[in-house]
Amino acid sequence: MASRTWRVLILLAFVLLSPKLASAREAHWPQVLTLGTASEGGTYYVYGEGLARLLSQELGIAVVARPTGGPVDNIKLLETGEIQLAFVTQGVALQAWNANAAWTDGRQYRNMRAMFAMYDTPFQFQVLSDSPIQSFAEFAGKRIGVGPEGGTTAAYFPEFLKALKLEATLVHGDWAELAEKSVARSIDALAVGAGVPAPMLIDIERKAKVRYLPLTRQEIATLRLTMPELSASVVAAGTYPTLRRRYDTVGLFNFAVAHKDLPDDLVTAIVNTVFANNDRMIEFHPAAAETIPSNITRNNFIPLHGGAVSWYRSRLTPGVVNAD
Image (tube, rainbow, N blue to C red; front, side, top):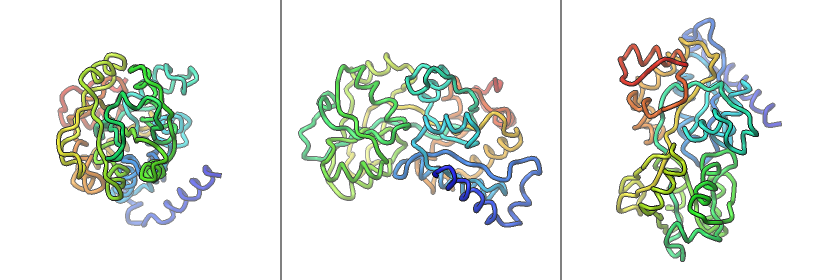
């Protein structure tokens, strides 16, 4: 049913594309592209809706942003060709590439090719201000909202608990739904891996008083030793109204990827459009301030699409090597 709905939306997007814009499309490019994002209330969703509008306007292709469960869903859909563009976190992409996570069922997913770096995803842990929970260690035995199954947090938070020898009840759902549950006190905390400011955390701050629980230095060290793909990450003071000092945590960088079979010149055009319109991207979501060419070097294993390689080489971007 959902798949049929998306086919209808894609057809409608193509029909509504103006003839003037359509004329900008190269003849060998597809008429429609589908971009896998994540659930409503998260950064991927907001960023993706804006990017789809931008690409549709500039390239003459109907680009449709498709809400999904997050990187796991996106990688699976990209592999089958049901979507052609997707957002992934580097950690989940590594799991897919090597087939070393339970969700892969031993299958390697290797049709993705990197186009550009999006932004860092810090892991953030929020509780209501009067919660008795004072530290990450006190998550033991609590009900923790971790977002949709298939999302980055849902994939990584269980590994966090295992590394720190804790057990908790994980609650899945759309971020908007979990934000409501947090305010209603039907869960004890939110664990959120998202670009900042995370829309669902801001939404909660409008409705309730909250606190953010930082990781200790020892916890950060343990997590990074257990999962080398994690990097040290900082959420700046003032990112959220109640965050008055810098927030030290761990994070994963996000990348926009394309199916390997998309035409090189189309991917070159996508990358060029994104970087030429960074001011507009920031209007869509402030996290796009990190969507800059030099951050492609944060990618340490996803092969670059040939069209992306052409763009970075033409700009002499340091650190860029061959596509495969």
